[in-house]
Length: 263
Image (cartoon, rainbow, N blue to C red; front, side, top):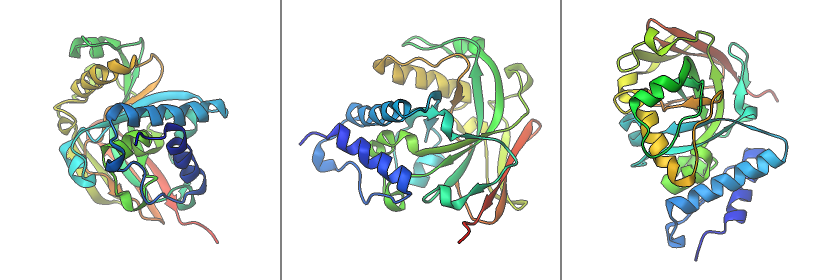
């Protein structure tokens, strides 16, 4: 039988607020489609905005093969980012805020004008970009043990949980996003490493892919919002009591402390 959009959206919201994951979200027996799953996400976002939040950006996830292999999905996901998901760098985040979080390193884009449609090119993305900043995205599935498929993660807003931005903005001409090494460290020890070339050859190309994909929903990427193109490395499972840093070689870094829950 078809997916119950409202009921599935409410289950996601309940899992978010309680930090208690569901055992399953969208079963194959429901005959789901990509459009169904994205309709669930849109309903979740609608309810959160109705409750006082606001849309602050958009994300592309699992575009890198390392990420697809990590979580057993065979195509990218994508979703909205809300203002409540953004946090300052160098300030602590507690394990009580999440279920089973992982952290990714990404070059985040801010556009100076809207860009979208079926004919977007690399040149359009370059022309629209105001600046890029280093970013850590915390992902956290609302499905127990990350037992997810593409329908689950699409409904669940690309498993997004939090975004922490660095303070080193650069123009695209000042960085080489087709070849910039990046690492994540826990207490100074490297736990994941990669290169921005893993993001669909270049994050700029990844955003072209995203514009084409979401055009069928009538969505464009908006000026002033924060756009994540996907991780340059396999996400690292977060460990309470560690200092987490994401660093792009020759560019900048972003850090925070991941603290153990008290009591």
